[in-house]
Image (cartoon, rainbow, N blue to C red; front, side, top):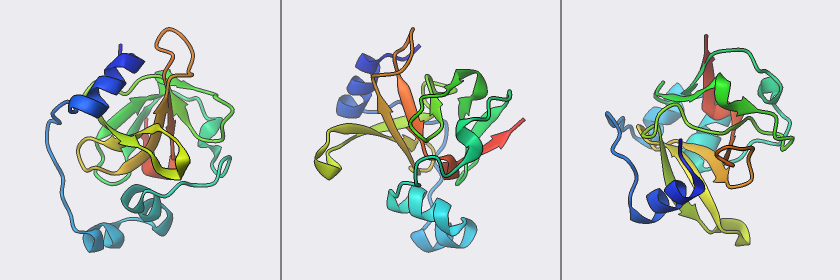
Length: 147
């Protein structure tokens, strides 16, 4: 189980090596992604809170990256954070997510990106439920659910 200390270590000293890397040009991503997903994942945008029903759906399944189809989260780690974005306590595997310090908007946060294709997903915070106390706050348009 990852902890906040693990996240801080990854963001400052280097992320786990992914199994593979997917690289495309911005134009190639633009041609394959819906506009809202392109804006969030490739331009580090954020969808409006509560704009997706994904916050309140808790069926079993797996959540994959909308860009490269890499497995990112399991629904068993999903919880209702009340923030307006889908939230998870752990990634599917330790190497699924990469972490980057983000000091934008006059805040210090840890950005989460797909470790395979570098798609912006959202942020992770140390205010989630026990036992990890992690809250991966993820843009719904960055994910696709598979059963």
